[in-house]
Length: 241
Image 1 (cartoon, one colour):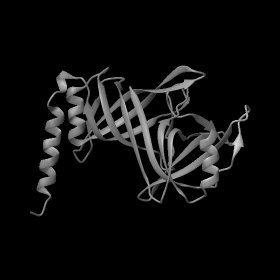
Image 2 (cartoon, helix red, strand yellow; image 1 turned 45 degrees about the horizontal axis):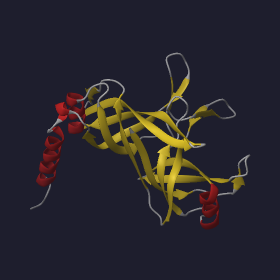
Image 3 (tube, helix red, strand yellow; image 1 turned 30 degrees about the vertical axis):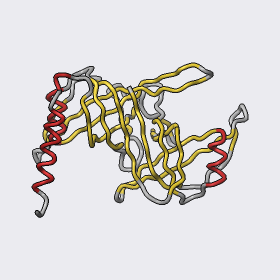
Image 4 (cartoon, helix red, strand yellow; image 1 turned 90 degrees about the vertical axis):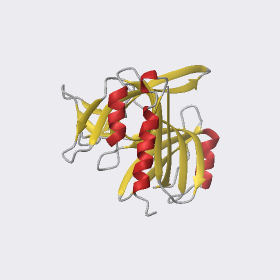
């Protein structure tokens, strides 16, 4: 299983160099990623030489491309914190594997290879559009003190129209799938916070699926080609020649 996020965003403040308790240089990059008028906010903790270079070369307003992994809490979802008034919030955090100093621009792309945590659920909107919801489990893997560490990350995915119908038709709990899409934040650009049935605050990585591929599933053979052919036909009908 695999999970990666790549974003291109704008620094909202100058990075400040600090040190961990062990003396390792560190800083935090605060990035804004625009999509139309909506903004999604990201925090990127950076350590060591990468942190020193970030403070040296970056300033507020500079574009930065980050590729890495989303940092979950112990339960595999965004970490929740409370403000002074006791209101719960969640934040998107990325563990960077690569930083590139770039010009202005904005995009985000999440790629996940994982297993369905339950059977997909298909429904139709009032306008007749199909939407399929499913949970997807992936792994975040890293090394600490020379030992392999791993943690499960849970995504709540939504696919639309023909993709929704194909996923609902061919996949079930435990099936493997690769999806590419974008995070779907709340109106403030952060992970959506909700209350569970027992009154606890919770959050989740909500992902809108833009592309998908079946993985090692004989039952699904040919369906991806079917979806691609239909998509090409729809595009062809929109051409003026």
